[in-house]
Image 1 (cartoon, rainbow, N blue to C red):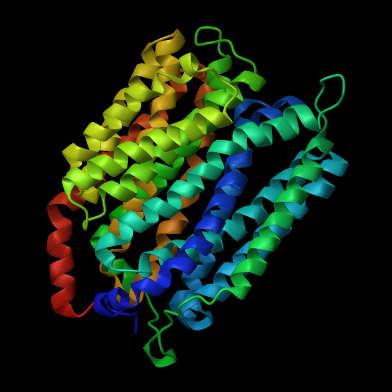
Image 2 (image 1 turned 180 degrees about the vertical axis):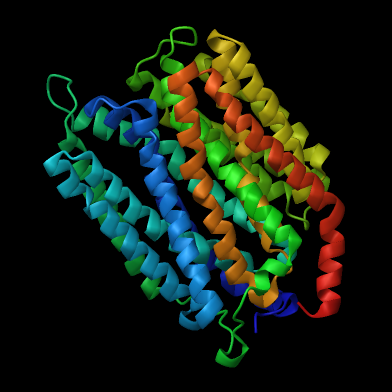
Length: 475
């Protein structure tokens, strides 16, 4: 049986080391995932691809999430939940090894300079991260009370965002500059060494996790549930759709930022300059997730929250400033979004569902602004989306699996399956970009964030009743 809240709270003092260890893993997979945004323009030029063809990078990577999660879900239906049988630690280690293998496959793909081999390596890498999403996110949600699950996930996701923030700068330097040909031309071999390095780091993380004692949350064999029990929860089904839209919207925007900033009516930047602004997009998510971890912490007073959030925002902003190759005047506009983020958090009143709706509404406005404006206004609008994406994954995830009890891992696999949105939505946006231009193609993410807005409103109104009903029925 899963540990109840009281038991978890009594042992929370022992969860610091496991949380730190898992947070390191979140950082690493965030870094490697964001490398896709660097690979897309790189492979597009290398293999002379259309926007649609270049988006196959995200299709294969995030399509693996769907395939992997579907396999997991089918196994849980007929054989019982695999994670409850094997344990979270073994599941996490398996995911790391699979992801490392995917990184290693970049070596033959680059050696033969064959696009389908790159896509195959990305698919295997995505399968590894699928296992990590199912295991690590659910594991973090269990390392403490259910009420503070959103706060903990926002903290670990903040370090995931730290990885996505430095990936465009460091990864772009490795591929576009350090390992490219001396004459500036692109070569497939530029990806060999970086991805071998990533594989080595992942294996070192696996070694560390294997040596750390992680608390077990396994059920007893006779208590493992089979069948489609998780699908009885309406908020889970809606949450799966919301996660599809969130990941699709976030990935689509991130995938097109470099191409968007290259447009003459926007900024006319090249890849070397654009990658720094891409870091701002992901850096915004990092700021927002640190603020979310504080804002959604129910144990802090409003006064302490304001002080801690102000300090965290300032510290993280300085970190981002030190990472990107941009002057203060070039990133000072981001201070406006930080202030707006503060206001949105306090209007949300530390309620995950309400905050989710507010952030989604702001992103709808920013996307429309990016579509109708030109120059710096369009650029600022598209980059500001990152800071309001910040809490969406963790809030959607925790709202979707709230109150699932023994169905938590099965429900988690369904939510992770919805990461398929990262494969499907960019493909549709890529098609629109080929037909109508990059700027107009952002209408696709607009609809994604509208769905998230409605999900947040739904949970604000109904989730309290759902949780009460579940408690009375024993779920």
